[in-house]
Image (cartoon, rainbow, N blue to C red; front, side):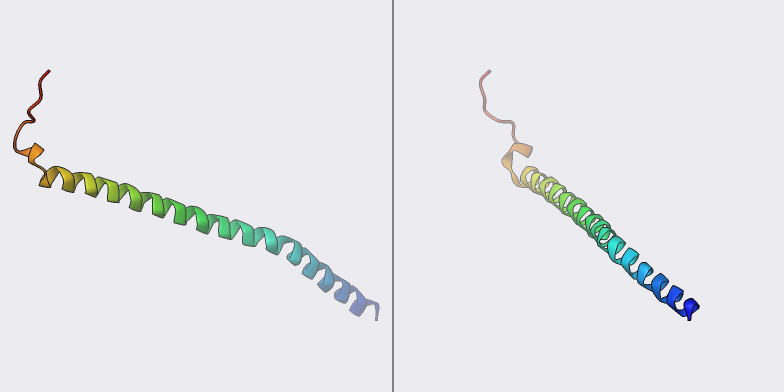
Length: 71
């Protein structure tokens, strides 16, 4: 009978330990996911700015004729 009680207490202890650590584990996983998403958004914005500047240079008249400016 005592062996059964020990196993039951041990099972309850494992569940409590898991409950305490599950929240921390979930926070860490979500933090990693959010960090990866932020890096992805940053790369997309940088690439869009690069492509926009490239299109501006290719389609403008400044690429073919010098500007009329007095220095």
